[in-house]
Length: 76
Length: 307
Ligand SMILES: [Zn+2]
Image (cartoon, rainbow over all chains, first blue to last red; front, side):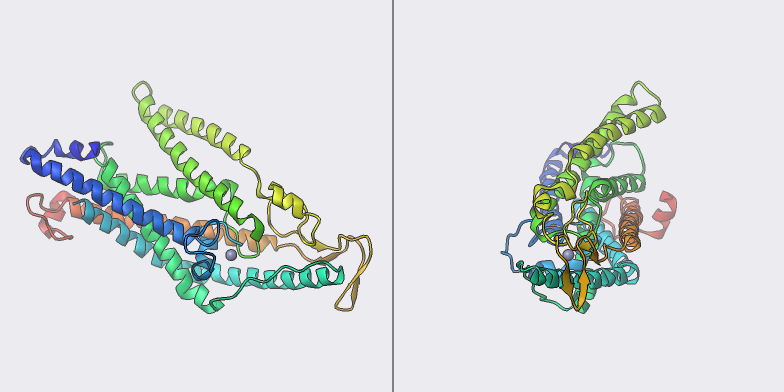
């Protein structure tokens, strides 16, 4: 991540290797968070509507139904 | 460090979602109930019309959870999960972008949340606004979903490009001129995109359905009045309806306006709360003692000095 090096310029006390470790750690944290956030967005807004990964049981759709309308997602 | 920031983002989002849920319970749920009542009446009339005309009736969807469950824990799950995800995304954007703009962390958080509100909600809303129950045809949900998600993605990308353009123009222009130029460029491109995307009422499935009862041609899927589209009179519940006569009214315009208004306010509340809480947590976290990983609050003396 190029972003990890930008703030580290100001912290010259740190050695190089911890920075490299923290950079890959940062990439991991960012990746996992992105995945979880997009999954939440998908399951609240889209699943068992536009497309479905768990089959068309409509259980999830019914559960989050009101929020789906309120949050602006297309619904029935 | 990144994990702590992301957790603060998700926490801010969850808190924003709780507020959003309370708001929705007070203001939006009564409207949703009214819309469902309208929809139920509409479905009943459509069934009667189709039976009277010797046409097939459409099957009713199953009710898995009661309305009480849907409007309380169900709605809470959805709004809180959505908001927590948005808070986490704001935090991720902060981790990726911080330190580049030469502004306070709090200001960066507000900028990102503003971008999120516009790109994820407000701009797509301009073409495909939020709808209460009763609006939206079952048989177009696939197309509508694809169009909506496409517009969300496009809005975010175009906003990002506009921001990059503004930053580039600032090298040769004043900040105001650069911002205005980039904003105008954005509006032109976004306007063309919105013009090119189809209106939902004009989808081919809706054009095809316009020979059915209750699906009169319109630019949107907002229910039009149900009329007797046959050339002979029909008798429903002992009342006779002449050709062209209205059997059931269209969707209440004031109800639709209110629902959309509260839907926008709800999102404004969510994103503002994320910006406010995350910005504050971030500022406190970052102004804590730099050497040792400080507890979330930092020492009061450091806080005072940092402000
Ligand atoms: Zn619905």
